Image (cartoon, rainbow, N blue to C red; front, side, top):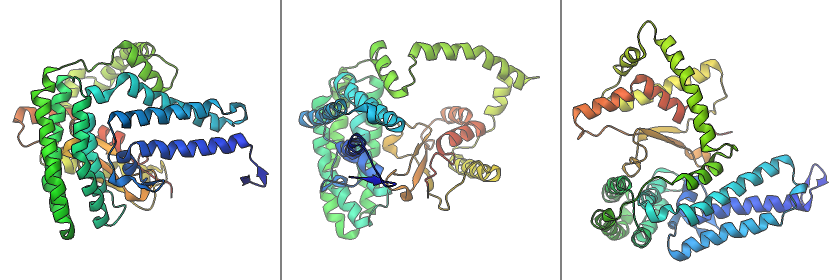
Length: 397
């Protein structure tokens, strides 16, 4: 019996506490790569940092059974004995289960989106390289073990994929080129001397499978194109579970359209005596260069942090755990400008990353200028505040 303040808790409350613990850690164990990035390393004696998510038929069935088992456990709960906070938590768990089963059984991205596998492979290797959760020698043992599993992952991908939108196919190949650089250059150079031989052996087989997968995407899957849109019914089901607001996509669209006229009038007022177009052109001209883009992002973050401290908007922890770095190449397909990678919730001391995607030197001048105009000084400021504003990554002491 658990005692809190001298009073025993109802069995249903204890059952719910156990259910939430089992769901949290069990769902992380279903995705070892995500578990590492969340700071969860060992599940019932199994070292998750050595594993890669299983997309075989058996692995997918295991995921389905996991979520369906929790549906049965939830159905057996006496919800009337849960307090309000527990009921909210229960709703969150039920939404996550429904969303996972919707993905597994209906949307099935693993059959249509090759970036699922490419980004999984990159994160499987990059996360233990960047997060200092163990000595570098131990982390490279994990990286090597995961490298050994990359060929099986891409075999599963080739067996599962039935079609893909052309843009997803192209992005997957570009990101996979980033995986090649990560394996063949970044990690190979960083491997401790005592582990270079083991790493090299695993890397050669992994690189062969990565290149073979790119050939599969280009030569075979490219002939089987599909639409990236979910369609009205699937989108509505996913929308309801992700937002959990009780509103429909049509409701949200109508609200946005009703606000549009008001927003345009306010833009005109702020731009006066210039037109909105003239004001936006003035803003667009104020931007960094390709060479100063990263420095400008760091400067903007420093300004935002100073503003928070000056205005005493929130209490910042003594430690600074945010790094501004280049977006990993294998993630640039979905982070074309930048993104925020939070500190592991179970190990917040390890730090967070604000990714800024550099402008490739291979881009024509006109393309680079177009991006810089879009993400001008003000646009970059908005991105930084949205993605890395202190408070997004602050952890409680």
